[in-house]
Image 1 (spheres, rainbow, N blue to C red):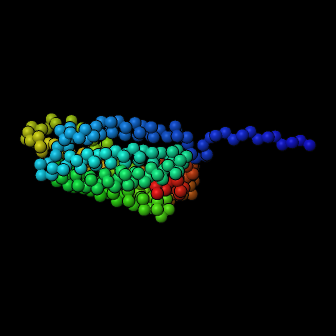
Image 2: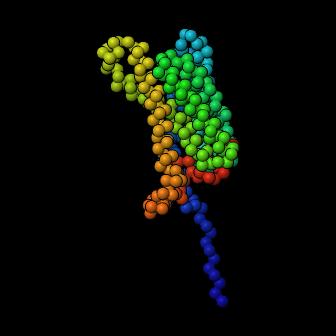
Image 3: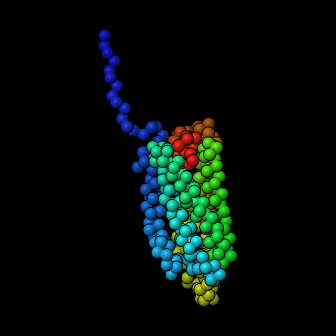
Length: 267
């Protein structure tokens, strides 16, 4: 009698539809950009020297620098933990760490930073247009983060994913805000003596307002586009319409991985 051939041991490969961590081309660049941004932005506020602040303190609000520094520190915690939260490989391999870090992201990062940002935004020295943007951003950031946390508590992981994608976009929008500040300063500087009549304060408030609004609205719109593109209903439509790529995407994780696995729970 011929014995059946012994099966070779299973190789430690990723399950179908789950690429290895190094096949996520956006993970490493995101972490590098976030680290570089924090290395540039954080030191002035850790120095406890108001003279090093990159936002001038308004004379009518003395605690501005202290609250701004706390806002930056808590926001840095949110950015660091957010990079780990959206990393599909880390979330799939370490679900308990994902939940613990999620609590830090919500309660040690977004909520305190958002509340402080609301106060700092109301006292911005850059005028009412920037103030409206800062207040709207803080409210949306708080709202999206709390909504995502509540969905996780209720184990509604599809909704949890959607709200946390929005929260991620708003958390990282500070980077695009700074990029737009530099861009608009360069583009509008030749108009300082003409359009702005040599008024440096008007020039500065205009640049700040443009950067403030575009800094978070464009990332949030991009997040909404991504959510629409990867929604389960859209995937099912692709699959039933005979789109092989849509069928494949339906079985593979996207930016935030599985939308139904308990590993996505932030609590």
